[in-house]
Length: 194
Image (cartoon, rainbow, N blue to C red; front, top):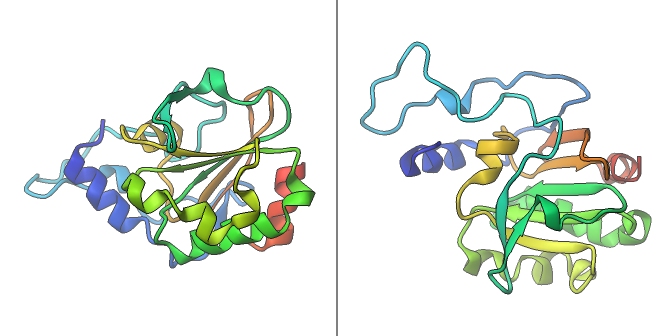
């Protein structure tokens, strides 16, 4: 598990200012964020990594919390039809805001997918994210805003190199595509519809 201090370092390093990377391109991370020592710790040669450097190929078990109600949300609660799209985001990241806005503007083209916006940030910051940046997504039955209070995403799915980090899974739970950072909306739509 990642310590609180380690998580803070990780979040500060997951900049949204870098160019997008996709699993389709199979680009390795420039550096392993998981092996970054916590403040006051000495670096070790073979530090255990809490998560794989590549995204989970199948949806792992997890526990997030529905932002509006606080109700626990697990793998069993995922939609059974359509692609499953996890978007790990920081509500203050301009790239995250733009990507959410673009998805909202193109909602009719991706309305058969299920969107799970996941964040480890303060729920107060998350609460107005969709209303402010992706108003067309507000109130849609296939869009959920989830709070990851236990850092399950970075411990079980993947540690992204930047925000937003998008993971498209089929309804069979198999990874179809992934990218870190903002991506051209035409490519986003194509990946989600695939």
